[in-house]
Image (cartoon, rainbow, N blue to C red; front, side, top):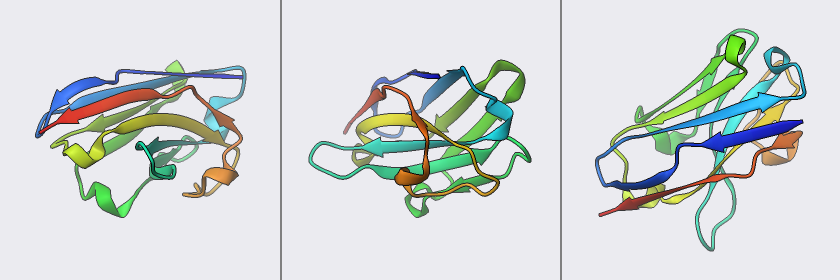
Length: 123
């Protein structure tokens, strides 16, 4: 099982970043795919999830319409489009997979994790 995240980098406040996570080694279309983030000195925080079975999406309250999560089952890829970025969005972003019918916001429910990709938002 492998989750390979990419797309992070340095971006100015108000800008956009697109993160991708390519999955392999498991049935991608059976899982909830989630994005989490961890800022320096803080706990890991749930960002968003997408149910690859029905396409339903879920977002953390702080997202407030700025982020969009989507899944491409044919490509085994989950994407997080982040717009109107703020300095507080600076973190390492992780993708994760949870074999579940209803997506969870609890990191302990996720079975597989990628290595993370860093996003730095400069103000």
